[in-house]
Length: 267
Image (cartoon, rainbow, N blue to C red):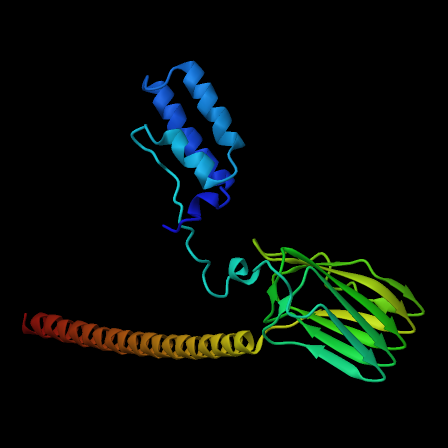
């Protein structure tokens, strides 16, 4: 446990776990109503672990909260919303171009200008300084293309005069914990495009998944064909066996008929 752990912010789930311990203690008679109300009020007012932990220290289940937060899984949205400052906060293209791509941190507000030029802002492998970031674009006789990863929520609020902002990626539900990307700004005789693309890794994973699906379909078809051929062989065998049984019955009937005639002639 680190020395500053008690100063970490407590979550709603942490407060609710402590409140549940207090309710159990009240039901068991460990706390009277006055103590319960005082501690419950302190629970919901607590903002840090340092304030929350002592509330249940003298109860059998306490202290209940864990002062050590587990690191977010690598690649999860929680690991990509990093806080702090962005690694780049602005870009300008005048009769030229700019790119922001790869591993970089998007600040809370990123400003860019494209004048008779173009720019590309690729967020697919980026981290985010906040759960909501704003990308403010000014495109004058130029253009800016924003590439967003799958799962983020996109809101477009830009204004276009003889130009426009691309709204096609709005309204796609975001994944839990994913950041929101708000696109603002002004376009005059220019445009700001927004598109979703898979990362190279995701494309390779999708390609491999499709390959596996294709192999599984081929295997299923082979098994189906083998089953069909086996059923045909079984049906043919049953037909041949049935034909043999029928011929045997016919021979037996002819023999019985001959035996009856011979017996009749003898008498």
